[in-house]
Structures are given as structure tokens and as C-alpha cells.
Amino acid sequence: MYAKQQTIITALIAFLLGFIIAWMIFGRSPVAEAPIEESEEAGTSSLPAISKNEVSEEKASVDSDVISKPIVFSKEVPVVHDQPAGATVLVKEVVFGKPSWIVAREERKGSIGNILGALWLPSGTHQNREVELLRETVAGGMYYVFLHDDDGDKKFNSSIDLPITDSLGKPISVPFRAL
Image (cartoon, rainbow, N blue to C red; front, side):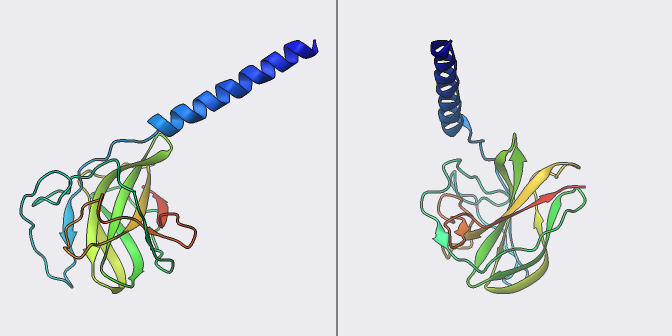
């Protein structure tokens, strides 16, 4: 009887380890293209078409291998509430110590999914800013607002403009639900 229990426990542990490893390898979602806009404080402009992973006139192509070396900040946390579904995401307030990006992302199958839109803002306190989206949010869906550093060119590239992190090294993000 004891040998049978030991075999069952060993099989369960092996199954769980296999599941965890598979989830770590295959759990990432592909990232969609996102529209880019500048704040009116910095002046509105259209950006020229550029190669993949760089900003085009209407969209930013992004790579799923986004995070390799995070930028560390700790006091910048956006204020975002549940909000009606639509083509924009309203950020009630955000404070940046230097020019940065607000990035809206969707949740897919319980994980962080595609980038839906990005908004560049100069340093300072910003209130009631709307991030225009490539695709509308859907009522009942979960979404996230992330903060990303800007490398100084005001062109969003998710492999260069990395997420801003907290003191523990985790990307700063706030979840919200579309109503």
C-alpha cells in the first residue's frame, strides 16, 4: 500500500513540474501593434514609418521579447479606475520624474497580453489623460496600465522603452476592468 501511494505522489509531482515548465516556456502571449500619440503638452505630431519594432505613423510594432533589463523607479504609480469599454483608456493621474510612456495592455488567458495603445508624456504630474487604443476594450474584460521609460526619442519601442519597475524590480502596473 505504501509503495502505491509513493508512486502516485511521485507521478503527481512529475506532472506538476511538467505543467509549470510548459507554462513558463509557452505561456507568453504575442504582442499586438499599438497606436502612438504624444501629449498636447509636448506638441502633437505624426511619426514617420519605420521598420518593425519602431513607431509608424499610426502604430507601434512591438516584440513579445520585451523585457530584458528594466528601468527602476518607485514613486510613479498611475491612478486608474474601472471604466466603460471603448477606444480609449482614461488614466486619472500619473506622476513622472522624466518623460515616459503610459501603455495599455489587455489580459489574455490570465496573463498580460497585447499592447493596445501607448501615450508619451513629459515629466510632471498629469491628470485625466486618455490613451488611444488600436482595438476597443470589451465590457467585462481585464486590462492593465503599465508605465514605460522613454529612451529620449519620443518613439515607442517596447524592446527599448522598458517598463518602469518598483523597488522590488516588478513592472509598475494597475489593473482595471472595462464595464
